[in-house]
Image (cartoon, rainbow, N blue to C red; front, side):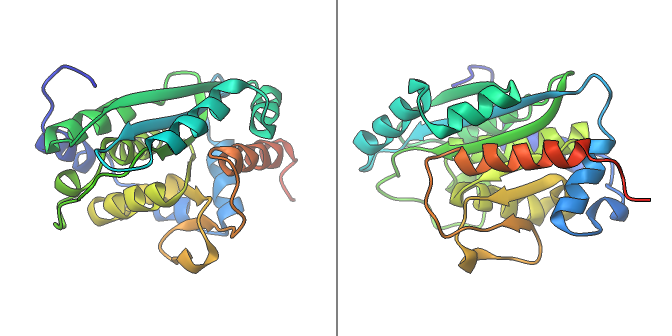
Length: 237
């Protein structure tokens, strides 16, 4: 984990201090919204960043997560072919293990908020890890979440701050998006969720639901390809 001291209040202050997003950014279908954002990107912002965050709680599931990680780093999945065609910057970031404190989650969120670099034009993220044996029952996001989910939250903020789309995959992405919506619903105009079952369709978010289970990051990378291909098409007259 990052060593500098960052408190939940620091993250909240940063998020709440961002400029209000225009309503027009959230208009249209998810694909239309994504196309608008891709069109507005800075000319040099062409790099696609694909990131998986991992944090292991103290519960079961580490062996399965090790297999997931081996697949992500092995280089022989369909996901890797997609990323190669995108010339994407692919990273797997391990955030630690154990029972996190709110400060751990705040640090992870701050780390995620650094995802959008000068040349970043599209972000695709997911999170995985062994679940904790118990989670606090509280509406406070930084009290109850895990660092990998907090990092997704931060990546969403980073994309919104840079004005670029963030594709977030999986149930943890949904948790992060709901936390962001509770604070700044306007920033969710930059967030596109995939890799969740159709039962989780929520009108508050742009969701590309799919009941088919794929390897982590496959859905996000595939959707990134669609966004990029759509952005290359001439605008309708």
